[in-house]
Image (cartoon, rainbow, N blue to C red; front, side, top):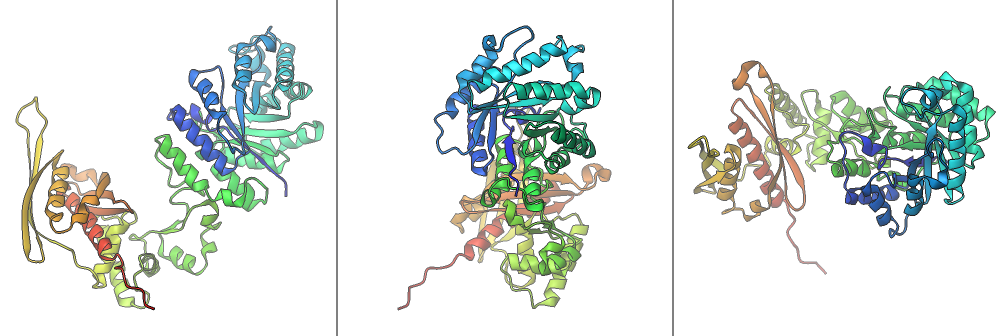
Amino acid sequence: MRRIEIYDTTLRDGAQSEDISLSLDDKLSIITRLDQLGVHYIEAGWPGANPKDDRLFGKIKPLKSRGARIMAFGSTCRPGANPENDRLLKCIINAKPDGVTIFGKSWDAHVRGEGGLGCTLDENLRMIRETIAYMKGILPTVLFDAEHFFDGFKANRGYALSALQAAADGGADRVVLCDTNGGAIPSEVKDIVEILKKSLHIPLGIHCHNDGDLAVANTICAVQSGVDHIHGTINGVGERCGNANLCSIIPNLTLKLGYETIAPEKMRVLSDISRFFDDIANLSHNKHQPYVGEAAFAHKGGVHVSAVMGDPSTYEHIIPDNVGNQRRVLVSEHSGRSNILYKAREFNLDLSKDDTTANEIVKSIKDLEDCGFQFEGADASLELLMKKAMGEHMRSFKLKGFRVNTERRSDDTDPVSEATIMIEVDGNVEHTAALGNGPVNALDQALRKALKKFYPGIEEVQLLDYKVRVISSRQGTESVVRVLIESGDKKAHWNTVGVSSNILEASWMALVDSMDYKLYKDSQKPTSRKKSR
């Protein structure tokens, strides 16, 4: 089994994405999680390029129990200068990393051309060779990133090879072939790597960008052609269209092709670190991302669900747990009886022998979704619907009426919203009112205020997210809207849905389900029993 080194450049190349700005604490947290994942190299940044990277390397040194090598990034010395006099190289040395990756030009157009180095081709080779040799005399690990290598190879094969040889002559531990423009295709990568393996005796790495949506494929082709060191980022973040996505590359190489990358038990945190990075970078997680996305093992069609219940391999290419993910079965108008039975089992409901009820639930869901409901993102509303259909649940309170008023008294003041509500619990009527930041918030506050007299646990509920979608805009302001609410308490999160042409009514439906679900779950808590002897 061939071992493939994993080099993570999320903090350097990935942080160049236009959507990402990481604090010093963010970077330290990410380093800790990357180390837990088991990558072999973590490229932390470019000392001397900015104050934040300088402080970062100062903070990294006290970290203990690291398995990954912390790498700095930097450039060759400037034309006409010696590396020992280069300020940025001195900054890298002072940062005391475990090693450094030096990038240099391998495309002749970038050496002589407009906007390039503005020096001779031979001078560029000297810069590569002498910079590598200088850094190798100080740091234990020195890698060379051959910038724009594939473009350079196609334009001037001899010179591109000379750049690699210059790095090897300087003592580079490895040369990394960079598809900097991201425009290479797998067949090109395969052919070029095979040529290099025959003509050069230098350990090779690969660094791909995703401008052609082929970074993962190109990386895998390079490995199959003999490369044993790969660069990438978590979730494929990076400049322009991003970098090669380690969250796809690692399981593809390990689970599909049998290479040794990271330990199997560490791969089970892959989904967690994918979501962790998006959270800390304040990005929306791509639920459709392969392997680690929330929808990667989600099944919606009834035929699919029926097959997966019998044999998961029919619609799942790997075991989800291998990458820390899990199977999800969605319920919608595309669902069949198998979906309902699966969800019933997930909710611990005994529905497997009740064909009539299951069929009634399927019909009810299809009718509701035809009206605009969506249950695949509202499991709490779905569970309540199923419990009611089975005759096992009744709402814990009855609405006697509510009214919401919003008043704006002048152009200089914000609108004021007030909700008045009347509910009944076991024959007892509660009539109360509350102010809120907008009509929906006022309604939410009034409902909580009325319920907590009977159910103190309601105070634990927090509204975590509130989404409104216009289902069809053709009717303008009369259009039907769908409201999705995410709620939570100290132990769990749940999602509910409401649909109406009146946004307050849709919000009310979702709010009621949220509170009803909390009360239902609280009523299911096991009571303490005396131990028998």
